[in-house]
Amino acid sequence: MTGRTPGPASARGPLRSIVIVGGGTAGWMAATLLARRLERQPVKITVIDSSAIGTVGVGEATVPGIRDFFREIGVTEQEVMAATQGTVKLGIEFVDWKREGERFFHPFGLYGMRSRGVAFHHYWRKMNVAGHASPLADFCLATALAERNLFMPPTDRPVHDLLFFDWAVHFDAGLFARFLAQKAIAWGVEHIDATITDVRVDGRTGFISGVDTSCGKAIDGDLFVDCSGFRSLLLGGALGVPYEDWTNLLPCDRAVAMPCTRSGPLTPYTRSTALEAGWQWRIPLQHRVGNGYVYSSRHISDDEAVATLKRRLEGEGLGEPNMIRFRTGRRTAFWQGNCVALGLAAGFMEPLESTSITLIQTGIEKLLALLPDRGFDPALAEEYNRTTGLEYERIRDFLLLHYFANVRRGEPMWDRCRDTALPEALAHKLRLFKARGHLVRYEWESFQDPSWLSMYAGFGIDAAAHDPGADHFSIPALESAFARMKESIAQAVALAQPHDAFLGLSARHP
Ligand code: FAD
Figure (cartoon, rainbow, N blue to C red):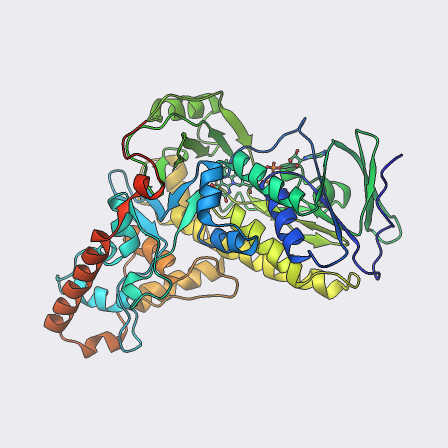
């Protein structure tokens, strides 16, 4: 065998080598961020992937945290969007989720202004009950921009809450991985294109000592990062860490993806449309539109799902349908021995709120914070598993709310979703909101108050009472305050530019 990297894995020694298995979004995000942060340390980083196997080929929408990742690796949003045919994402439009014909927007931004320590939505409820409020969405700048296909980068220090919003990007996943690979390789990461044929596990320690590849190279390492996708070659396969199945909570188990040519304006948001047996995503990119139908195989056949998606495309279909099977859930441990799994190898929840890439990012950040640079103290893995488990559960509950709150009566999948027995943490949140509009925030919550609020408002989940602090102001005083807020939003909107123009594109359709 040739090219062996130094030394067997040790529970105690210094960290000298990191082997990343997989060159999809997870593998290259890990490679770039680790290379960047460990640039002054004598740690060799190797990425092994297999062009014969390829990547999952989807994963185009992100959440605003991705921009922190860009900053961390020293690139700008503009650079990324230029390299990946990217666009701006101000949030997600949910169509037909509550019932057919209704839509709402989940913005990356705040609603209204707090006053006297009382959140805006309490004042809004007071006005709404008195018959004086327009929809909550009218008090959110991100929503106002999205509705008009406008964008402007938010100011770093807005004068007040009303002008605060955040944004994420959509990108071509293949181009994003290539962009990151070029950076990582330039920063000294070794890339090996080969199929792993065997994973060697030390029977005494339970640690992975190395992997063997189709090109005859055996690669040893101290820390292994499993980014091998749904195969979970190292954590699930070689180490046998079981999978916890959440299909009882989130019913979809398959997806078909098919991009199409672009038509119509370039929208600065993702659209999610509820369908009979799941939902359809629409992700606008500069060169095409990403589409997919995420569905429950118990409620629709593959053929019907493909036909439905094709029928609903707004442009000409590009290529063959990409059929993907998945099982919602997570590995019971994300870090075992000297192996940490990221991305699909760690677990998967449907892309309803674009949370997989953000989980990769926070996974790398946590790994860096707990880096076993002086050996594998079990406390490090314990903390990683504890916090990542919480993060998965909080996201799962947020996704579950989308299904549970529907009132699409007469469709078997949706009817069943309304009967789901909720995990207690989510049931508690719902009880508190319904009782007096109180928003609960747990540890490792990816989605903050405005996101929950957008769901409650969008699905028509009302609070029985508001915070008594909201009664400090009379209805006429609130009426004029609300009018001023709307005026501020209108003034901000007037300064924005068309999304196409922000991207440096002609506003004409291709
Ligand atoms: P993959 O892309 O599958 O990469 C696996 C890598 O492992 C490949 O490089 C492969 O070659 C390599 N490999 C596997 N076996 C071997 C072997 N034996 N030897 C060598 N190499 C090997 N996430 C979002 O955040 N937003 C979205 O909008 C979104 N949409 C999605 C839609 C669907 C239908 C699905 C299924 C997922 C979606 N995701 C989304 C999730 C997102 O696609 C993934 O989190 C992301 O692409 C990371 O994938 P990965 O790198 O873990 O796996």
